[in-house]
Length: 257
Ligand SMILES: NC(=O)c1ccc[n+]([C@@H]2O[C@H](COP(=O)([O-])OP(=O)(O)OC[C@H]3O[C@@H](n4cnc5c(N)ncnc54)[C@H](OP(=O)(O)O)[C@@H]3O)[C@@H](O)[C@H]2O)c1
Image (cartoon, rainbow, N blue to C red; front, side):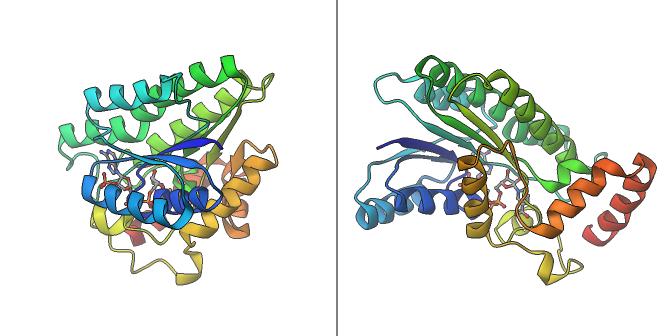
């Protein structure tokens, strides 16, 4: 029996991770801000799969809350074997129109939490020579942003995690960065982004994203990009001249905003 800690477990991709890992028999620590949704999900998963589920309410934009989650990851009496840094959000406005405090909160959830929780988890896992960290980034991290700092956040998560993989390479500890494309979750509604211009077939199902990610983790991959179209898009982003990548990104952003 192993224990997985998932941030952003109340909705979307994080909730899919929780359901899938529970079905595989893992005990869970569920982290997000909304206690009611966490408690409800924990009850369902305990009853359905007979596993242990802890609820850890935390706002990852708040330093004290991030510290509590990091402490849970360092708890040697109840070790965490899989960390899924999944919580994240974006905002609808361009950079200059955003409130600076909100931009900092976004950076803290999307980046600082990933940094601090990965640090706590790996310092616990490497001495045990056991465990894995999945950081949820995005295809968006391969392209310059839509005015908000979101794509820069995700670019950081991807590069950071690929670097971590070198740190853990000589151990049994695994590190993977998951880069989904557009996925049907609460993400865009929460941000107030009209997605009317995005063709339906480009949307991924959250359960499929999680399935592909866990398969890639088992196969020892470091980068997981679910679905062929997004594999092609991310490969092209690395091959094309940057000026062309910026032009393509501007076209998508214009439809997206
Ligand atoms: N959906 C997409 O198209 C897409 C594509 C690529 C990558 N991603 C990435 O996938 C990850 C999951 O997103 P999703 O699409 O599943 O979004 P979602 O449905 O909006 O879920 C976001 C989750 O993050 C939690 N969260 C948000 N702010 C938080 C905070 N300050 N502290 C703690 N938890 C917080 C939310 O819970 P509470 O509100 O209860 O706190 C919720 O559980 C994100 O990192 C996102 O950037 C999404």
